Length: 632
Image 1 (spheres, rainbow, N blue to C red):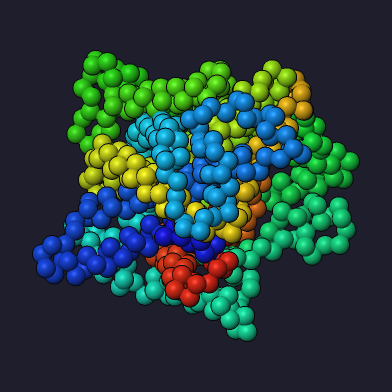
Image 2: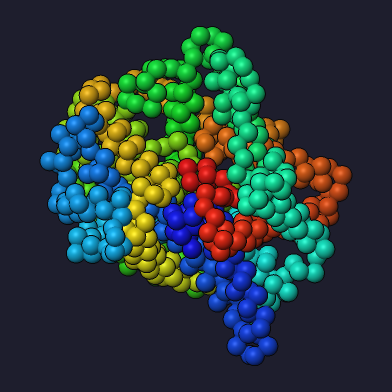
């Protein structure tokens, strides 16, 4: 369903968020079916349904932006889009190993243009896909191992909120044989909250099918309303082009469940950066030059990006320092100095060897690709650091869409310079950074939510790891088969280009620029990153030492990313609702608010799934009730 919706219908993104619409809707369907099964004595237990949801949750992104719809265009796009003008053949072809993908350019051509029969040339694909399983499995093993290391600290010691996990637990109810009717179904406020977004999306969905029907434009999830669009001055248009006013019910519901300091900080720092760009424009520093390249010169773009990279370094350092005792226990368990695990505890020794196995797979693959060990480890460290930061924000804040500005393909060349990178290294970096380490391939937030769900269902952490590995492996095989069959039948050129042409054009275009833009280390970027380290260290100190300090530091790290540009207003609305309820209703008022928050989330997710079904049955293409920025 995920591949069909995104790649064929160009419709709603069912698997790209950290509360995936398709997986959650199927989970609700399973609970409804369980009501009938319970009467026959064959009802599934609480651990059964949560195990099923965990398997769907962890693997939901694999079919599209998590892996399949990124790796296949990446493999073929280099050959299909290579022209004498862009020089890709001269730059890259001699550095690409034979096993990385089909070398027959006719295979790439038919991938984009389709075939009369729709047959997939499997003989050209089987070996490359088997080879690509190595980095996929290696990164998955390392991420799952990190989840085990983080589990005790975040769930038991710090007791993070995990808002997205709360949604799945709340709809399950408290019975050992769960059904929807044992959970929130008897709460009237819950049903009101469900029906409001469902009804509004019903009107907007009908408008997509029949434009004559009026819609509520301000509440259409597919709408992008930027402040810059209402201004006439070119400078002001640039300043506020990314300051969006959008209304997303699910985000409002999640924000109503966040701690107030978290929701306040998420929207405040987004507004803060709007003030920062004003200062840069007024002072004449402007946005800078040669943006998002190793030649980038200081301006607003460099300040916003590299201070947040420095801030992320501090966040990762703090998190790893908090895990120091867990790492010692894992080392001792791995070498038999202590029992491998205790009842109900995560198998730390097993996690240690998982991480080692994943690192070995990644190191072997990058070495065969021609990427020097130092560059490979640096890119891996940047990516795993980004994964940890995003997982922390999702676990504590519950953001359905989340990303950080930490792209190893841009960060590493900027820090070390492109002058020391040869053609083989640049080519290998393009393959290594864009696909197996893709931002939405990060399953760590979903793994942490899975551990939280498992805690209340008496599912052992080791079982979470086993079913996650099984579901990821199954999703790898099935999604590649489905996407290849769909693409050769339809032709990638006749499918959404955001999935088929953007990726290879962007990454190889960027990598090609490294051959011509020969620079040394960017000392301006390094100095700005150090400033970001100092800013975040100061905010951490204020947050931990002074009760009056109202801001949560991680709000700074995620600000001014594309996802926050579109989310900030919905989060601000949820923060305001929760603040008013607590101010006038106290703790009792908040307890009554929680079913409404969950209802709003479920109402939007189920309405989007409903309209996907309508669009699929009617053959409607190009219509969506999810926002495209959930990918990035």
